[in-house]
Image (cartoon, rainbow, N blue to C red; front, side):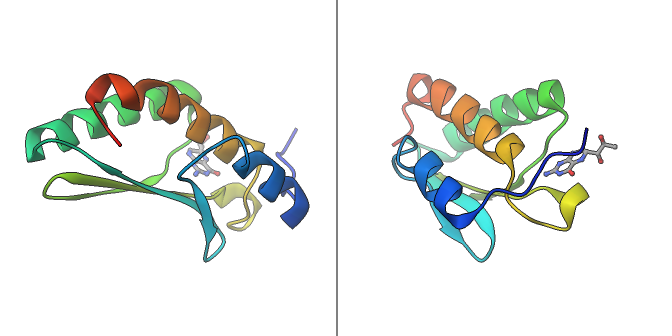
Length: 101
Ligand SMILES: C[C@H](O)[C@H](O)[C@H]1CNC2=NC(N)=NC(=O)C2=N1
């Protein structure tokens, strides 16, 4: 079944359990700071692995020692769905082991 777009209230509820994540321009967004460029790339590769597992993919941007993540669900016309929240949670689970803040 196709994922359903979340309401603004549902998005706000989800974000209350995802510190550092915000809702911007129709996407869930977070920027992580890392200790080096290679640490940022290492986290990007880990995130890409999770994305392949979930078959759900964010826009990832490395800017020197930062990794930017922005995600919405293409298949529902670029709305935020539970799939985006799931991906954000999975990323937040692994980010601390990379020293991300
Ligand atoms: C065919 C494949 O399942 C789809 O293209 C997947 C891949 N990754 C995706 N990622 C995101 N963010 N939204 C999607 O709708 C999506 N769909």
